[in-house]
Image (tube, rainbow, N blue to C red; front, side, top):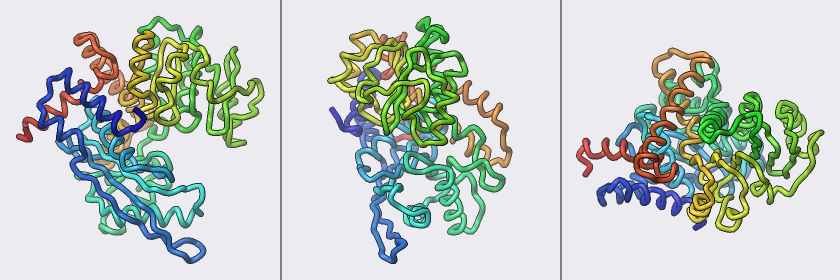
Length: 413
């Protein structure tokens, strides 16, 4: 299986079987309640006009307004957007967030656009999407978008509606009048690190004696690495789009972050040796963190993975076939919808702050985030132990139980 939408529905069905979910509810949850496809015409710098395909998937809103993510990449598919909106429903459920799952996307390559073309694309997305605000559907950031794009989205929304509403868009800069949350940029990586620390403790892995391999050194991977490094973990290998480096005695992550800021890549970092990026996931370690793209741990390489713990920072990095192999090998897996839920939790904080006008300092954000993440982790662990199921299925069961309760009490079944 190498289709993220089919993989998402597989996990949904597996959890539904454990729960004894009603068939009509499973059918409703197996497809987005609304999927929008539209075009964005953009005037390019040379005077030509180019048409871009765009999408928005609203998975379910029984638990609250749909929220998050706008992914921009040239090979984007409708199946990917649908799957990500389902993942958001699960993440909101496990995080006890009163929100449904939403995801948007544009099929484009930002690296081949000027800043002006990119801005016109982003603003065009909001105009064509016609978002209805903080109580209905709230776009956020994802691959190909960031703080600047979210600020443009907010400005476009406010220009259209004629009123200030910082809670209408997520993942914005923490600037007065823009309404972003402090700690938002670090939230996903921070949450991954917190799950790693807790799972390591349960497995008896001491930080100073534990080796960590991280695939991907972007926003999530680098923050995860930095947070674990500061807690004494030994990061022995990392990769990015340009290659991979290792040092079995441990990489100086502070120095590596500075190197990447200067050069744009991890390559040629002093004190490390290059290695084949294709073999990074198979390097022996105590903890493996895939923080890049989906479907990287497959039935082909899973038998060769040598680790005690996998913490999924990326979305859907492990195929169902690989999952079964890892379980047979006794490798513990902290699934993506739990491990990388920190970002959507802080997005909820951002919305709360935007609606109230009461903004928190970073220490308060981290305190609340840690509490939410550990509560979600503890709930999933309880379900896992009680039902003797995998952590992945337990996380889905825990989230779906809350969603189903909301659907049933509303009379949707």
